[in-house]
Image (cartoon, rainbow, N blue to C red; front, side):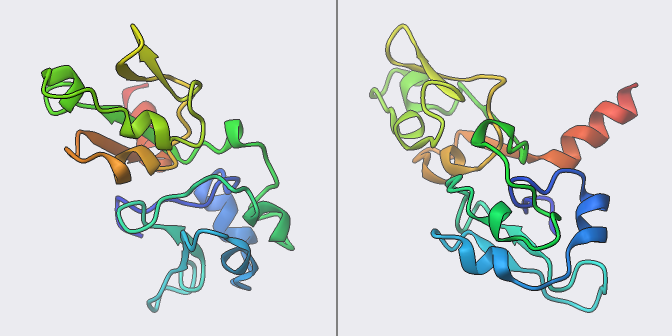
Length: 162
């Protein structure tokens, strides 16, 4: 899995997910947005497991993958508990912060609008700590001002700083 790829919402810890996934593809079939893809390659631990490449098709948090999973490798959870990663906004790249135009694309497309992304003063987008890292905002941003960090990289960084 490359650094930009995400585990499905509800996958949680990567090690636990890989131990429980039976590579059946039912989660991929359940995804209404074709966000879930199957990992290819020769590694027996990861080949056949689902992933999301948010640069090609982000997760719109339909949450159909968890209930479709027969082993619980992907738990049936609420959107707010997805914890796939986190998004970070570069204000030096954002149209709105630059004063070029008022762009609300990230806010309007966010599946958790008014929770994960809010508008400060009615127009400045702010990504909150409620962001679950689905990747929609980064995908739709016309300036590529939003960076997505996968859950594993965030938790690795926290462990290395402890």
